[in-house]
Image (cartoon, rainbow, N blue to C red; front, side, top):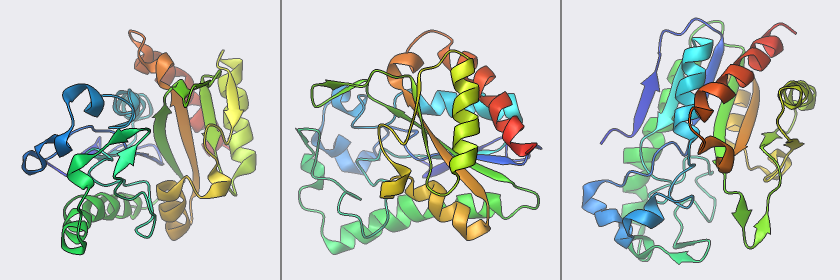
Length: 238
């Protein structure tokens, strides 16, 4: 099992896509972390539809994309190493037996084998000349804690508010119900990967959160990519 995959590495458009929660895969030695198939394939295990959307955007844009190769339940590549939920023992009421006794040695093993290769690969892709925009792709569950999230997409940002507004307005004109810094806020540090690599390389960066209800529809990834890709190109022109 590869810890990271790069799609379209020679893509010509100066955008780099990332997907921190692209996979629900668990290395065989972890025995599915003690979970059943349904739990791993629900939102606690990955961002449903995010991998397909990222791949469709890579094709539509002719841009490279970096995808994490393991479930966020193994280790969350969108968290700082000091974050308390880098490796969770429960997620939204589901206990994760395989994470109950992660000692410092095992923690370092997961960082070395899965987390660091992902982030090193992003840095390597961004090191190429001419990259202008880093765009992280995620999805969210339509109902969490009994509360319905009644919108299609959230544009997450911290310092790049103008770019976020421009992107959101373009998506809204395409028919999506858009909110800013929802269901999570970039102002609370919840765009860790995009922020870390964007700041390190002096790039503009944003994160897109798409309601996975939208992404479950047939052909949704291609249709959404056809809307998002021109909006990102428009950002490059400003």
